[in-house]
Image (cartoon, rainbow over all chains, first blue to last red; front, side, top):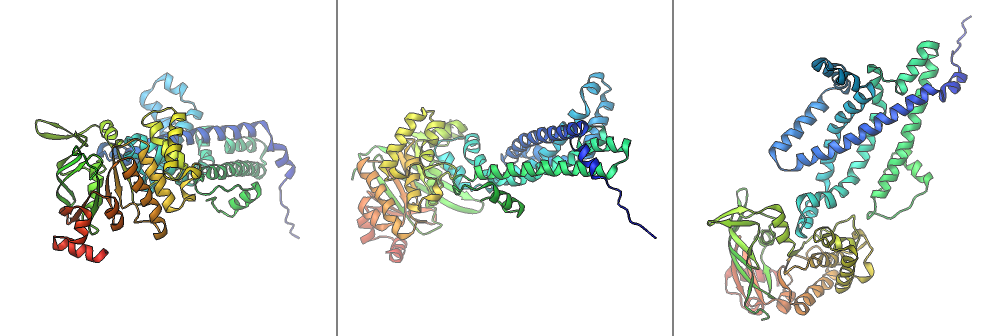
Length: 252
Length: 258
């Protein structure tokens, strides 16, 4: 007789859900993703402005940046930064200062900047040219008009894809595991390589990713609603916002 | 005529081309301080481009435009024109108000926010003072009760009146109107024209108005200019030109719109 026994212990999942190593991993994952995303947004705004500036030199520079960092895998960029660069310079300071944590933030931030450049550029181009005309006609310079009139309007278009980028970054930060960073996936790996409760720990990591992503999705819905000022002043309950989110509807 | 003879706007031999298309082919136009000039012409005749050139939203290919004796958009040295610095262009533009066909209000700002944006951030007026002046301007255009509304909650006519207040907030000496009522439902045209009329009569604002509103032109304008194919074909006192146009092209155009 064949018995089909499933070897899975929910008790282990419960036990490790709030394990110190796992919680430390969650914290590292959050820090890497948030800081890298902030770097990405700043780089994205700067390079997008170069792309729409009309200057050939700046446009080309920004174009090469996007081409280079979008055209190669983030993992490769991470390996180059963490292992490649120290080899080139053979400098003690670089080796000690460039921790896995810092390398992950820098590499993911620069990589994210390339994607954010394209998102920001699309956002800027989505604003009617009449807005720039009107801003200039009341005496604003190009930069003032960008900052005060065009960018705030571009944000509405930019937030949804930026949310996607951030969620992707949260999950893809797990590749930093390969340079020895103990983020969430790395923490699970560290534990199951000792106790061999592989599936249980992977489920623990999965649940944590879902929790984090859900919380940030709600934050995103909130930001989109705040930016929709002037579109419609509609207040919504948390429940209808969540159901909107689950249904993939966007708050206008 | 209300004009007292002092020239506020002078266009000399203005040429403008977009690629192969020559949109303006030598425009000479003088407008005196306090004068209201209406520009008419078929679509594609270069009317809007002329207005956009006057406040340097478009660069010129040749010719010169002066407002209040100052060259707009360029500096002249030894008879040669050089593009002016961005800051100077912005400063000169702020003295020239323009009202667009499609309003172009800033949708993320309230009516008052639209009006005080430039006074606060360009002229650096204290916010309180700018708000006070802004409210007075919105009252002047009959929008006192919509101060805190966002543009998408306003009708086209209301939006255009806010746009006029926004242009006036920088205390321009010249106002340009680019078909200000063309995008409006017919029943909303009157309220915008009324604001423009009182602007002309009560504040003696110098105005260049591109429009097809013949009634407005007859009633308010000191002079009508007819453009076709990038040149000024005919100009004169509105009533004379509408009653007895001299040029065949003017006759043809008027016969179609009257």
